[in-house]
Image 1 (cartoon, helix red, strand yellow):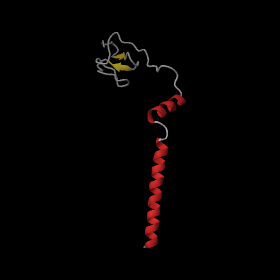
Image 2 (cartoon, one colour):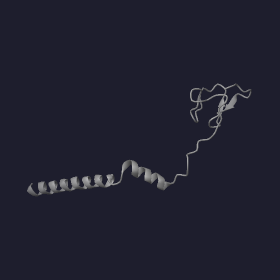
Image 3 (cartoon, one colour):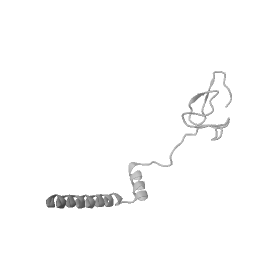
Image 4 (cartoon, one colour):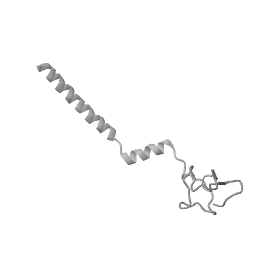
Length: 94
């Protein structure tokens, strides 16, 4: 970026005020290799559409499936019961 007389310039990606000698923007990480140039401008980063919590829950369910937690709970409970029965039998015959 060009040196301004006041010693600072504005990051074209996020709008942060940076010293003229800055090699990158600590706020957004932009630099010459990622598109920092004289013609770059801040266009903002918007996600497409309006996402809600229910959309997030649908995504989690699609990615990880449902019932995985219940299977884990089933196996944990079964192993815990086996250990308890084993300890009771061991204690009874001791």
